[in-house]
Length: 111
Image (cartoon, rainbow, N blue to C red; front, side, top):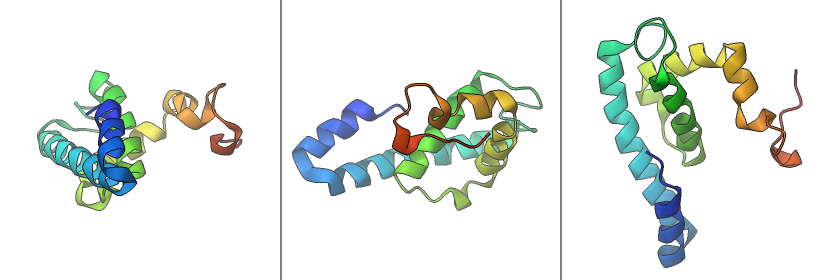
């Protein structure tokens, strides 16, 4: 689901509206497929009750979904899993807004 290069290419040929639509549609399609899989595999996290690589990959895609205005309300399993992951201190510390190179306007200053 990593689409940055395609999104940049789309914007250069069709402007920001086309970029937003393309990103939205691609992420929505991918996450709807993930939702169906997680209905069968999820416990507290993507695969049961232990954090796996699937969880590490899911979080950035949900950040992208927010950026591209994907309706996450139709993906309750993903939403539940992400909520559980965001409650873990390691995931909170790894959030992009808490990284040393985060621009000031995007920085999370809460503790």
